[in-house]
Image (cartoon, rainbow, N blue to C red; front, side, top):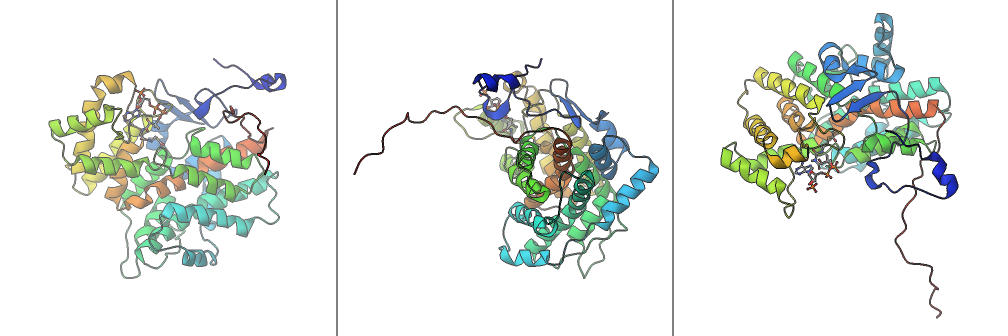
Length: 400
Ligand code: ACO
């Protein structure tokens, strides 16, 4: 049921909805979620079908244009992305200003915002073609920037992108290749990486996408808007959760029944700050459909490296099993979300923990920029929420 409250403002009335639990901020035709049923559709296509049949670049095309591409459209889109993977050589100088141990998400906020310095002048965001070029630049350059962050943190030279490789393959190549070792991308890892990108590509009006729309509603440069999205994604309640899941699994330590039960009780205890990271979701009150695909991907990758009995995976599976039978989790409809298994997969591929949220940002860029484009393609107002003022009444400044 939808109540349209737009007229209320003219009557001096406004609604109070902290956290926007019951407020739709826009109309959108990009992604549909039915949280009760555990359904996620991109442009009408179920995520599980996309994850099995499609690939990240095709999904990017569909999210941006609204339809799946034909063969020619796909090839030209893919080539276009490949041709924009390089970043301006001056970007290398940005790194000199960052500490070696800086969190890569902090660097990403700076780098992506900084792209505006290269592509701001003469950028007319009212022109659909210029918006499209900005989107292509962002999708193409995000893996390059992300891999540069990793290389900087480990003190290795940056790798230039290789346009003969697919999107996910190229990302893994830039992450792991060194001048001393001819890195061959494992096809199972590349497929898993591509699927991880797909599973994180868009999720309607989540906190970071809403941030991008809000920033974009002022007419801000798209690179600045995406930088704002990256900042919002960084939080542990959003994109930082998969990093936190691994910390939780490591803290739990072993998969014995008593031990897991102890942590389940801690998660239920309102006086204990411990939360079962990777569990619960604002919208899904059923299985997160992405979590199912992620769990399968996790099994595939761990089998590939001969670690089907990986201790973290054993703890995660046991934890899931016990939580799903527990009254507290059943009543509150708390199920594993996409992040519950993604950390284990990323870790098995070799991605360091501090890069997990960066990978999420690479994937979510298409969602952010598609929402930005959708907003600018239609009538929109500057996003400007009201507040419920709870401060002092008017009082006189004390005379001296
Ligand atoms: N462990 C224990 N209890 C939980 C958890 C959890 N992970 N998640 C929610 N609850 C409880 C809350 O304590 C609350 O209980 P109460 O009704 O007795 O007070 C109830 O379930 C509802 O939780 P809220 O925090 O009100 O739900 P909200 O929709 O605001 O939060 C959120 C959703 C932030 C995702 C929350 O479930 C959470 O913190 N989960 C862990 C972090 C996480 O995995 N985040 C990733 C989300 S997916 C993504 O961003 C890609």
